[in-house]
Length: 292
Length: 308
Image (cartoon, rainbow over all chains, first blue to last red):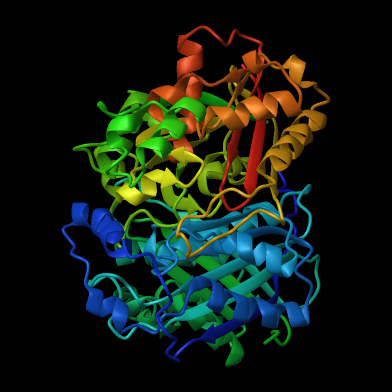
């Protein structure tokens, strides 16, 4: 049976920014440390005031406002139909603040707005999955916004993100845009019943999916995280594999994708293996110069 | 259309009396009396020894089908919480439970930012994701939260927080709890007080905003509030719902307020706890229309009309 033709989803615009500057520690509740202690104790973690005092103190709101303001100067945000914010770190000094609510108010966004979290660097992949599903539905109106951000000022010392992590925010505006030129995006998630996501299975998924997308491996730049990048380089010698920079935390994958697109890559395959064994593949195809 | 096919809730065994908790909550005796006598809060559910993971585990245990094939239908798990974060980055909170309950095939993710309204607004995401799935596919909404600090138990002049968890299986097919509409709004003028006193408190316009979103929901399905058999409220306090009944106006008997005194406001779990107890009490009959209402303190209001 012939498949119904799905609308192409395109990156309408994007903005990204890193925040190396140090900001002053904001005034916080005196009991914030004990609040975090209550949160961290079940995981065997102690709060560390030194970590909080020595951070760059970029709040989610400050970082998000920066990139959304830049995006807003290029295109309206009032036609947003769904706004997702993906992150893995705490917004340490503002643990009860609804950043999305404040952003909606500031930028005139009247749409469902929710944050996705708790899946580390996989969270943006889940966000892209939701937005692709939304934008393909006939009744869905407007654009999809994916805001990805993290900040490294944490109330504890941990190995879950690199010590030299970069406070950073990135926003993609996606639209269902017919056959217009631009950077298109499609994606698919794979899961193996036995839970073993080895290099052979991942390579098989990639080749099978690229085959259905009618793209040759030699024409693709592959983006992947450390160990996966190494194994894919070995398993797919024809591919140009780019390793992500983990210092960007949740944004690492998309930063590498945008770097490759800006460097002139025509097809970029984001390959993300989540810790829970789910494999996400996203193909970014550039039909003309990408908006920067 | 979505269906809430199965709903389960869990209140930990610990309980605290508001008057006895006053000192620990930094409430004067007079203020504690206000919370008890006027706000209608009496007993608060407390996780005295349980962790958040324990609470979620209890809700999962109560809702998950025994058959492996039925578990496989769960494609997504949304852990909905009121606080933006309830665990450190990298913590295996839900993934530990996925392994225990053989749910690794499902994609789990935390949802937040609509505060206590998050599980209701999450229905929109569930609908989007289920659209492309098989008819049997389900999304599992998991709610549960603990006040990690005693100060967090009190939303000034509003409520006292209890600890609880709940779970809800949402599908495209079902024979109960059809979701007829979801109305949600972020009101522009709601108050946000991010640092002083630290916890956002509802705006003075709260009562009007609540009426607006409930009217939105009823208008979307061409119903009057009298057509509902029950409104499953959030358990923030009784007085605000009594004002609502007077101002909407509607009969106070429509409002399910029993758990305000029994458990306190249990973050995102209120609608599901109230559903379970209302069904147990025989207050919902097959075919009855009812409403779930929840509010995030920084302005997200959500109301869902369902048919039992």
